[in-house]
Length: 162
Picture 1 (tube, helix red, strand yellow):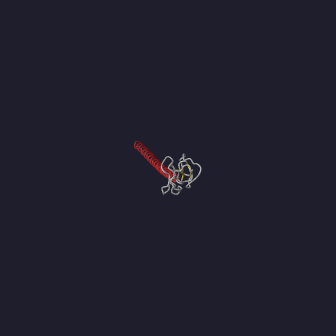
Picture 2 (picture 1 turned 90 degrees about the vertical axis):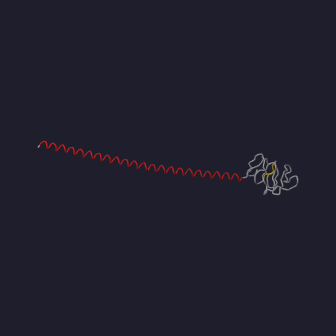
Picture 3 (picture 1 turned 45 degrees about the vertical axis):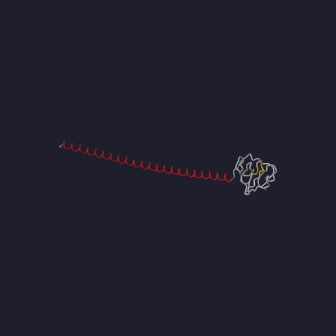
């Protein structure tokens, strides 16, 4: 069978004509697989001969031209290799687009996580600094109050002795 012919029931048998391969329903041209109607060229000549192998139909139109041959519609219709190539190209393009989208999304997520980590570190540093300032202020005020209270006690005792 020719490349691109996906119809298994086009049974190949002996002989060739029109540049194609002879089968029970007509011929396989370069475009795929013919059905029982055979192959017709631009002059309207269709090969319906399934027994002789000479490529001419009952009215003597002559050989079935491969360059103009076309698969007529029916159960034996095939699929050309161009369709397969197009499907493969579309799948490859869709796959590449999906990979690019996944990479971009992952990059955005990584950037967001990095920003959140940096903000978290800055927040922790600020909180630690605020706590340290509060602790220092409280300690200083406590020491100052303690010294003042000690000073008042000593001065009070001196006054009482006099």
